[in-house]
Amino acid sequence: MRGSSDPQRGKESVMSSLSKGLAKVEVGLAWDPSGQGEPPHDLDIVAATYTTEDTSGRPEYLVHFDSRSPDGTITLNRDSKTGQGFGFDEVMTLELDRLASTYARVVIGVTIQQTSGELVFGDVGNVRVRIREDHVDLLEHGFTDIPNARSATVAEFVRDEDDTWEMREIYQGFDADPSAFADLMGGSGSS
Image (cartoon, rainbow, N blue to C red; front, side):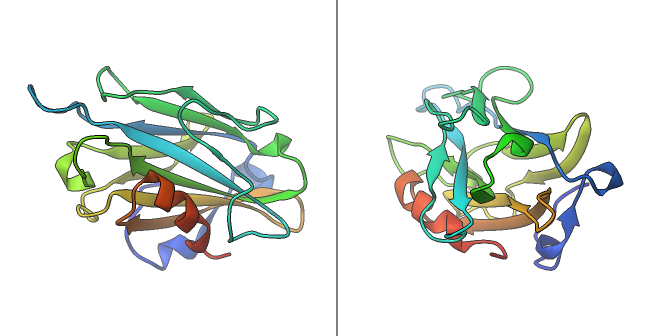
């Protein structure tokens, strides 16, 4: 399934086969390295986790570079500070079926971690994100339609009343650095 910037699509749910909900998903982020003589482009996947009591305020915790969830259910398996290499430069695994019942929502975002200058997605070549379960792509996005954003939410995973997880696309760009973006993530989406 390919993502789009159509706001109605963000309300659609994507479920795994037989309506059992999502169990273990992988988020991949890729981009082209900066040009010769330019500072490296450093992009990051960010996961913000929210409790049943507060599904849209401040996250209970964030998972990003150099971190993982306290219980090990959300892990950044691969981190890149340059975008060099083949395939996806950053990969995060979310074991939704292992998350404690106190958690109701996980928002996935991408942010530019830049120490020199203020890069936007339009400054970075071939930025793309993919979310998949097993070998099935659930969502894939380029960032060409939000070239002036420095951060973006991509999707949210929401636990329903049957204790199953579903994914909703919440593609939205922000003019925010990584620390400000963390505070904005909860306000995007349908919760």
